[in-house]
Image (cartoon, helix red, strand yellow):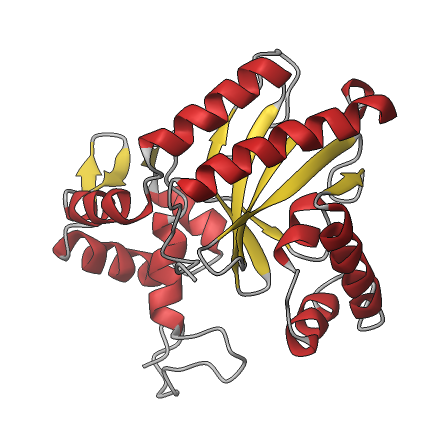
Length: 264
């Protein structure tokens, strides 16, 4: 049944967006955050732009599954999510040794250190250690960014197929022709051993990234240093890249692996 008007309709969307009711339920759960641990019915209705009756049915289902619970001020995360959270933590948590390497690097160089892996045509942050400066670049674990720009993207696209680069390019504001630029960027990064970007993704942000490799030498992740461009003068780039490279080799030697990037 279609949730908006009661008429019979195919449950699965035909535009590649998946099962509509599942996506709607997940959209509701996605409204919860550290800054907003409780959401009201009105906030859900306004954010999803769904009829109130539809929202109530979705909420009831989420409550029955233990994914939402009623709160005096609205709805909050249910105990059913704890099992998933525990499973996710056990699968996604970065080894302590890797985090120590990243923390030492952030303290020594004074900028935010991020670790990205590829997920489809996106890159996802799986670990980060923030800069000690008040003005710093912030990327949260789990954040996704496009592969069509940024130093880490140039690293992660090394060895990518023409099909993959084309998909990334088509998702960019530059169109299919951007695939050639992506190939040039990744080849240049492979030659130099590191990649640099400035204001490609965030205005005023500069990043330096190096590869983390698996046992076969294949790139499975990128280790990057990022911050305000004024703190990344040209003469410091090579020094940053050298320090990142040493840290990446240490992480690789520790046997870094991740569910999104199987050891190769």
